Image (cartoon, rainbow over the protein chains, first blue to last red):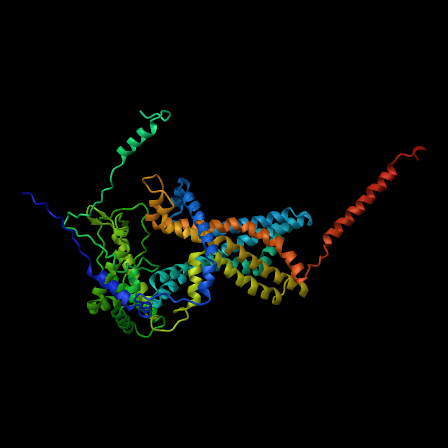
Length: 217
Length: 391
């Protein structure tokens, strides 16, 4: 009689992983403070009926988001996007390059408006256009230099933030916050230089250089 | 032969479809090789943490009591020096570098290997520290190696349980990095942990701060909205303050007030436009990138859904392109709306109107043309032939 052999599954879990998981879940302050044994979520007398009234609007919003998600899925499912992602995957400064591209378009718009403005003379149009171009050039150079020098400090702050807040919030939230530190640093550097430092401090410098160029011509 | 025009075509098509359909077979995972055991994760317990910014190893080591004790011992070795914190970090880093064995020379070359930094020789103080404190350092090194290996595992999705499981090639585990790269990661994780040891016990402004956490989550969720909120702060507070206080081209107080309100209005309009347009796009994008196979085709169907699910870099790259693309597409319309809407708002809401400044160039130009016109007219009158004849 041929008895069929029952296949045995080899289960070899590493001990430290299980103990680490249990250590993690036990020692977090969030888990110790927010213990729930099948309790219901708390409800408010004002906000819960208001949410129920606004439900049709929120349902419309959700359906709209799903339509947008389908469009994004179709756009990502092409060969063009595959080639684009493969070529730009390893570029670390891609975020910065795309921000400068947006500023290029805006500054180009303002320069074309000054060049086509009929209320001004041709000389004044040229001077204003040159000044705007120089402001753009100086501000982009400053952005790249500042972002490169502040990168190490941002990473050090992110490591400190993660070590200090370990246990005071759930892990998913902590990972998202640490990612947000790097993104927020870049955005703040670009916004401060383009919106505050450029119009206040860089325009007189650019005007000085622009007027010199026009005097030479 | 199936002919759609025939009467009985629906029957023949149904017979063909019945033949083609096969039942789905469920297969059980069986591991035959006993020499190389496989790692399995308990799905009932909370899943292990995903790879974070600084790595899983540095975070666990920083909160370890033995590591904190080792840091204090290292402080005593260094003594009271100007940069005590930095030199203790160097000491621990060099001692760990001595204890980790060198990587083997038979390394598999990759297409894009990471750049390895230059090595600096460890100091004698580090050698004495490593010799005397081996009992504390060796278990630390073992822990760091295991955790970095866990960080560098290549995962695949199990089709039955739909969970992430480490990938096996011929029964062996696949790692993402070379042994040399792993060696550097171990040292960097210990270094990052040492940098964060002193900060755990003290009170800091970034410890359990709800407002800061809100802004950081907003930056991770939606870049455009975060930039718009930060721009509000600049345009509504800093820029008007600079215009009113600093001496500039605008000497009249009315012009200064007009410029300040102009900046405030531009900030508010930019915030509203950015929030309305970018918020739904960002939520939709997160849905797609978290579950790409629900909205995209799989590899068998001729799509790229598995590519975006497996590769983390492509996932992040797509996130950046879509968020920045929305900002670039919105830049020109936003600027045009601000240029068009601000003057009527200031006129009809606040009752302010920009006084037309005297353009000296225009008057001079008009004078020139007027003078030139008179000259030409006078010459024409002079040169006109009269009926009576030339004079």
